[in-house]
Length: 593
Image 1 (tube, helix red, strand yellow):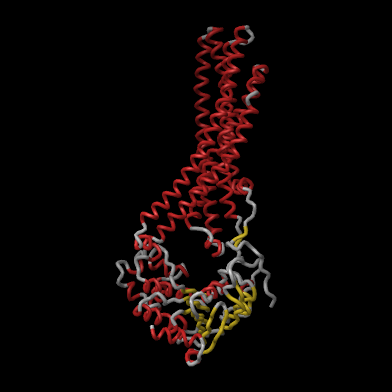
Image 2 (cartoon, one colour):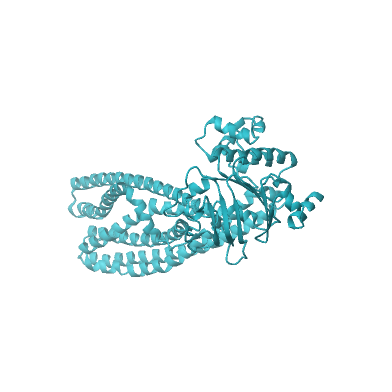
């Protein structure tokens, strides 16, 4: 069988593309186009009322000061009240619908980002701290939520005020309109100049926040180490130092934002003063009525405020684009280990024959090979042990079989099919992995065991726990299977966590089992119980035992000795002990210890 082609990708765990945030957001808006259309209609009505207000004020003032018509004045005042009631209702509907839509879109985006992240290759997570990723999910997406919840609405509103105001200004008095619009190029130029700087500054702030979050998450996850070395003060100092970086970056951003607002505000309202001065001269000359001047001035203020708001919104947009870019960068990361487009389906039942054929692997181009030309076969139902000194590459082999990483050269097959041609469901569904440090979630014992098969019945969960010799301590827990184990299983001992991990594999019922130094960190009694559970687990299954302590590999049919990424010896335990190679030396050294 030909070896599937493997694309060269970013060694950090993904292949980035050039994200286009706004373009990427558009497909997420389409399902809500009906709600957005209603928002647009409400916005148009509310803006129309706002633009009509100066004309009504003109009529009101002329009725009061020139016509002296009380009835007309009353009707105009009542009409204004009703118009503003309509505007309030339209604003309510528009804000309610748009905010709800933004919440739904961002919630779905958060879900999509999380779903994408958990499918990325382990290499991606070795280069990034958990706190940084959670910061992207929280802080960056919160900025996007603000963008969609209020920015779009305000942008549309101010754009309507600007366009409508300019048109009505021109209709009212073209000469004054020229004076009003003279400030627009200055405002727009200032917005672009400061906006680009604001975007860079905002991106810097978000990066600093992500660094601080990452450091805090790391300290919390290693709290026992921090406290055992009495490093609380040092960790606080480090966190404070990172927060100082956040403050400095935020102050820089605030300075740029203040400059933008100051320049735009001054220019915009200086234009209003110029219009007021020129309009006053026209009133004195009898070319304008007082009501016409006031209405024109209100339009000028509306245009000036719209231009100022649009400049501010442009700055907010630059901040949001920086946040969106980081979010969509993550969404556009492609996993280094990807499923084939048309996977080969394994013949059922799976036999469990595993073959490593001339496998070499390195974690990155800067590092030497972790494995070099490794070849061995595990027959269906056979138990093979892989031993060797620390750093020999044993755990690397355990990571390559379920395709957490892809080989650099050579191939690994399951039932004569290259594992790169299999779907993850077929491949990883056939393999049970028991690591040295079992990963438990903060839920109950039952949830942790059933993690491998969520639809398992109560009797299946209990049977798996019993087979793993876990029921003897589970029955003593305050709430039995419903006892919460705490974050990472902190409320349980190492042996108890390992037996729950074994129970999880029992429930999965895999054809191939990989034990990655599953007893190396346990005391003698816990090790005995776990080994008894493993004896039951390994019966009839293809098994690879990664071991550092050699006494745990006596049950193996064959032993392979790995050194510096190469297999240097193989045979049965008795053959290798009686030889004069590395295995014999390691075994005798262990006996002396």
